[in-house]
Length: 362
Image (cartoon, rainbow, N blue to C red; front, side, top):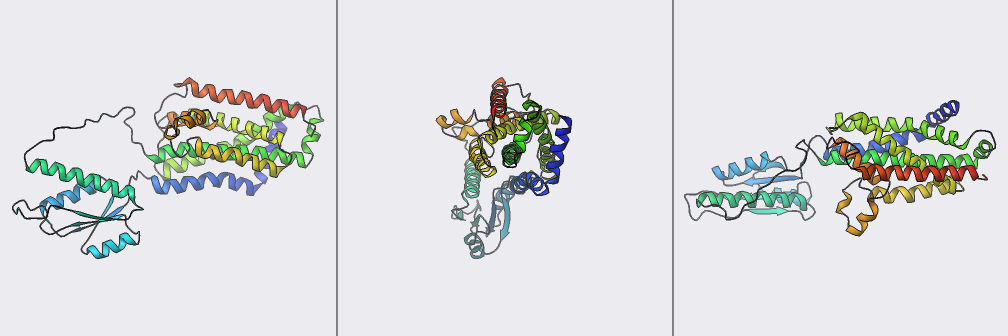
C-alpha cells in the first residue's frame, strides 16, 4: 500500500499541467477577491466633491466623510469635469456644495446639496446619501438646539475582532479549491484508469479494494495540503485576511472535507464509462455546490425552502466549520450537526465506493 501511495504521488507530480492548474485555480480566485476586498479595504467607491462654499461646516462635513474610510474622497473645482468622470464611470458620484452653503449668519444661504451619480454605482451612492442625510439632519438639530424624538441603540453581538468580506470569502475559497481539485481529479483520474485497463488489472490482483482506495485518497491529500497552505499564506500575508482560530484544527477540518470530496469523485468514477463522462458529471456536481453551498455568500440569504435543502450539501457544513474556526475562533464541535452531516456523507460515499469497485467488472 505504501508503494502504491508513492507511485500515485509521483504520477501527480509528473503531470505538471494538471498540477499547475490544481494550484493556480484557487490562487487566481484568492488574488481576484484579495485585490477587491483584501488589505483591510472597505472602500465602496470614489466620490469627487466640488466645494464652492469653503465654510467651516462644509469643511467639517468633508473631513468626517473622509474619516469613515468607506468612500475614496477626492476634491475638484469644476463640477462639469466631475460629472464627466461620473458619466465615464471613472468615479461613482460627484457632490456639489454651492457657494455660501453652511453660512449660519446668512438666512438666505443655500440649504441643498446636489449629488450626481451613476445608476450602476448604487452601493456607493447609497452610502454617500445615507451619510450626508444623517450628517445634515444631526447638524440641523444642533443648530435648532433640539434633539430627535426617536433614536437607535446598536449593540454588537459576537466577536469584536476585525472582520471583512475577504475573511468570509477566504474560507469559501478553501472549500472551493478542495472541492474542485478532489472531485474532478479523482473522478477523471480513476476513469482514466478504466480507459487504460489499469483498474481491471488491479482488481484481478490480491490487492484489497480498500488499500487501493486508501492509497489514492492519501496521495491526493498531499496536493490538498499544498492548496490549503498556499491559499492561507497568500490570503493572510498578502491581503491581510484573518485566521483567529487554531490553524492546525482548521487544516484538519479542511482535510476531512477533502477526503469527502475525493470519495465523491471516486463514486462518480465508478459510474462513468469514460474520463470525458466523469468530467461532465464532476462539473454537474461542483458547479451547483459552488453557487449554492455558501462559498461566495451566506446560504441563509436564500429562500427558506432552498436553504432547507442546500444546508445539507457536503460543502455547506464544511464551510460553516471552517468559518467558525477562522473567524469566530470556536470549536468545530460547537455545532455537532455540522460534523454529523459531514461524517454521514463520508460514510455513505465510502460504502458506495467500496461496493462499486469491489463488484466492478471494469
